[in-house]
Amino acid sequence: MCDVAERLEKMGIAKGIELGREEGKAEEKKASRVEFILRVLEIKGTVDEKTRKRIEEEQDVDLLDNWLTNALKANTVQEFETRLPQSHWL
Image (tube, rainbow, N blue to C red; front, side, top):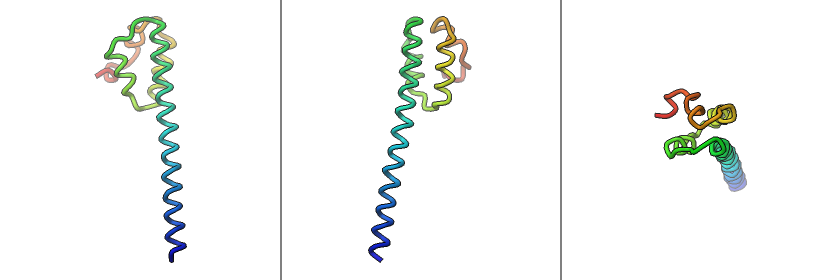
């Protein structure tokens, strides 16, 4: 019985480690998108605190990818903001 319990415990620990790695990768991916968006926008103008905060707080990586595309296409920070649905800025 101890062998089974030990194996189950080790499997649980391994699963926890794997989940931690996946969460770390997701957070790293999110952080890199945020950094890229802000870098692009800073080249195009001044990023106000409200916009910066909204970008930094977004958790959806797919949405951040969309915002990065919009940041690259926009000529100014203001144009970037107008390309986004207003619901994203509430």
